[in-house]
Image (cartoon, rainbow, N blue to C red; front, side, top):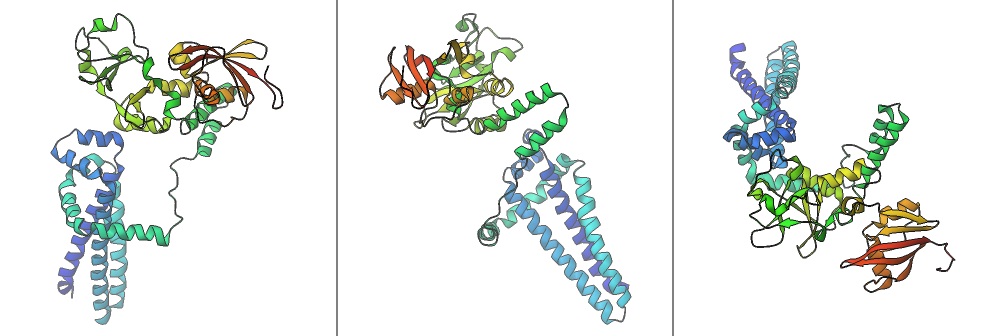
Length: 419
């Protein structure tokens, strides 16, 4: 009796091994972190192939789940056939034992054990499994569009209101900060950092960027003499394209162990680009993903209008008083000069202004005080011009080539006339 069932049992053993391969491959590939994937991309041929598979994770995961499901269906089909044969032959106890053993075998040997072992050495196993997995993925490519359509239809028809759960909620962060320390002063600082981090998703890059006219750029080749013994305003050496004025590369001068006398452009790295309407959180994600420290902000015509550096973002997050005015002009953005009178830099953001006075923000399409002045006046501002913007009376004190650079501010009531 046993010899008659031996081919079927061998087939089940092979299917368990196949299920173990797909389960361990799934765990190994998707257990890898970003640093592991970068190392794979810079490794040998097998490691680079593994990184290429992970470049399209949906395609890889669909193939793994499809083949694993196919193997498991075949396994349980054979197990059912053997159990029915044993029962018809008058061995109901053996049939029940075989069914239980088949179930426990596929769970332990086909799922739990291989996945547990895979997470111990995910990079090595992923590289080893790359060749067979590449074959399996390519074999499924002809039916992949059908599977994608089925997945899309299930999302639209079966679970139309399904939304992925966020990895981390703001409330989780707040509770973590609250229970992490008993020091009230340190807790206040951590909460301020948390608030600054959350605000990054609301602040546009054109509110925080360094305007193009505030950046020194150099056309290759660049020598140390071109710096004239001075650090650049941004702290970064910005190089342009050889035949243009658009920023193409950057390097942090302060973090260079030694600065060569000539050809500094060879030490720069290509910059990333973000649109003017992107948020600072988007720009920070671009920096992290592309491993850059500088992003160039471009307008709707593709022209660079400024830069945002990683240091600028850190200053905003970790300094309660950090502002673009302080970074660029080395002076506070809002300075009280008399009772009820303040001097405000034109590049101060309206968000910072209303937060400073704890007042609701009046309607405006502009992002800065200078923009609000010119929007209210409806023309280019000149020294001495006065306008009313919500509860503020703004008088232009100084004007640069790009608009008001220094504005006097007074607070008035809702029904109070301008002084």
